[in-house]
Length: 609
Image (tube, rainbow, N blue to C red; front, side, top):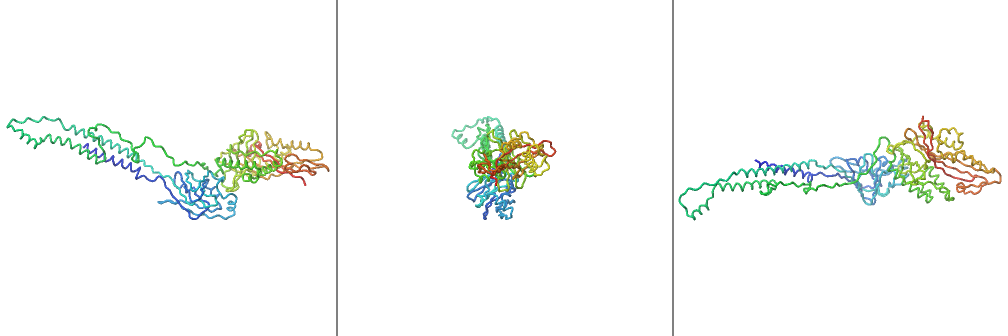
């Protein structure tokens, strides 16, 4: 019975181990699903939507080929679509079912006014766009593994003019784990061990069942036979009991060994049956398993910001650092060459006007102060607008490596999806300035209207009121609404400065100061506790006239360099620009409006007609 059970155990062990190994070899399902498409009609761009990338779970490995250069970038789906608006592109779609596949559909160019304006507002090459969270490029072909969540899509191109890659394939990992394989192998090993134990017990029982050997009885005395006859009889007749015993003791173990061998299990020699064999661990491919298996990584998932509820912030901190590095590189090169054309690629509005005017003045008078360098970043404060439309605004503070130079606050705007973020205001902060609490960059903020009633004073009134304070000081009805503590601009160009300058003029000349409307937009971004950071610009004119016949005036410094006049019998007019950064408290708050920083400079000068 023990031999039958042993044989049964060996058969079960063989079956279990065989099935377990088969699950990890011949029956192992594929580890990934790969689909591919090729378009015959060339387009400058290929768009791979978030729904296609998320058609299956896990990382997305995208392989692109079919063009001399391959460029791919990812960003928010709405941003990618907005950038493509107006251009023809190939849209990749995923077809599910029993045989998943990719298809390519050509989307024709949109010729409406808004779409056409978007196309012409920036470069046709998507490389370097401020919308992308990350971008890659390669020659001929590219294969990248992404881990993009829902709401993020890919744009693929060559250079925006040449045809984009024509062959696109996407693969996703599949779950080909076989959790039952190892239990089956272990169960088979248990049955194998049980079979060996049963076999040893059976052989031991067989050995003991032979019993003690008896001495054969003596033969009766009788007729003596001759030796030759005895030999003949003995040679022809075997003693029955000893013959059966020897046959049984020799053949039975042999039969068991044959049956066991037929079951696929090897049994050690009879002399070694008492030794216990230790099973060798077997890997899923049938080879001896190592003590530990190194893990293999197929690709590093690409980190992306986690989408928040509500309108998304227009940039992430990583995006803004990249934008700031580009802005710094462009403005630094433009400052070194005094190249206003190059500067316009990354600066606009009042910041561009003032910096351009400074270039002209410094060309005639190198001693005139140079504009403050825009640091390369990273930004210490990032406050992006939360919106899905354009134009877009972001506020940032870039710290200087030189601690003696004030941090620079920047208001940057992006007019269209294809245009770059440009510095609209560049305002150094006042010493010991404390910014109000602002929302985190992952949440963003809203832009307020110029006449917003949510604040203690409207942004438009802040511009009018501060200009009035610079002109007439405490005679202004707005004087009590602004905090004078730490306001160094009021000290340097306020009413006391103006009165001192009037007194220093000779009787042959007069000087007048007048408010001039600022040309820049007022940009107001909400802070925590319903306040606002407000950037604006105001301007003043300074007119010096000759009031006595035959007298002359001699401009100095920047006015002389900007006007090109060394002496005039008529007089001169100079326009000064002030870029201001305020904190306006919320409506109902009794605290005053604070000046956080300012930038000032001569904008233009000319001789009076």
